[in-house]
Image (cartoon, rainbow, N blue to C red; front, side, top):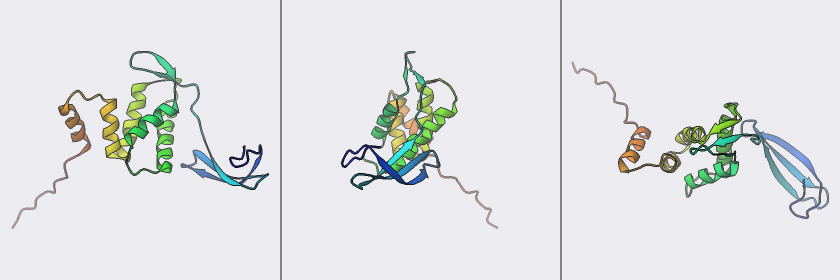
Length: 160
């Protein structure tokens, strides 16, 4: 690994830790030339996956497109880089669990929606507004109603 400080070609690994529930490795490194210390992050990359778009066209899976859509959904929300990496890794893990070489953009969108719904309701609504292409305010309200469940009512006791 090239040193980011002096650009020397070699560095040594001083520490390795599993992160993201064991699906990635964080390595602490030290440059053998200038002793600069830095960290690297390694994770599984999805290869040979084709996304079938709504119009029937096909394109290679792009992590960058997934991240760009999620970044728009989380814009100006308090969400850390580590939380974002965990979210992206979880979504990609679910995509890989499908075990197919082709996946529809719709299936990817549904996986993302499932993760966002349990991660952040505002990001979920932002993503849903683009993904589901709400035609009017009523369709938007319907999605909000699915998200916001009425509080459970307690059974009333009979007064004696």
